[in-house]
Length: 104
Ligand code: SF4
Ligand code: SF4
Image (tube, rainbow, N blue to C red; front, side, top):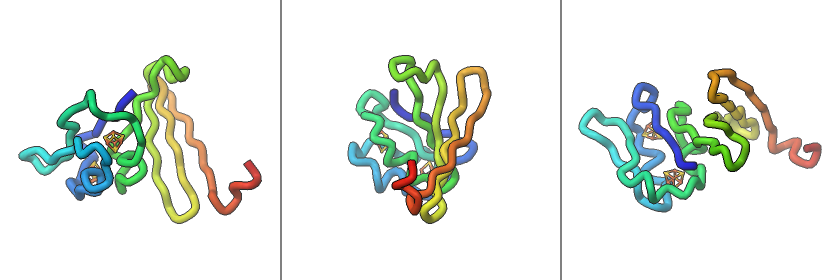
């Protein structure tokens, strides 16, 4: 699977760099984050959760039914907004609230 970083959205805050357990994200000369060694990403999603501007998306592989889609998320307190973008561009948004976790 792996992740992709949208250079247009990235603000260069370095939060993804600090959280990545594989130490594989770097900042380029334009102050934007990029994956130095894509093959070493094991899709732990830590950087996807950490990015404050949803610039990082998890690639959803065919093996899990993703069919070329991508997933990003935005967290505000207990509430997380998950955005799934399908291969054809259609979007689906799922909202979860950890305060209501026992209801899922
Ligand atoms: S998904 Fe995990 S391993 Fe891959 S770049 Fe993000 S934080 Fe690093
Ligand atoms: S956390 Fe997001 S905004 Fe910050 S450097 Fe990484 S990709 Fe860019």
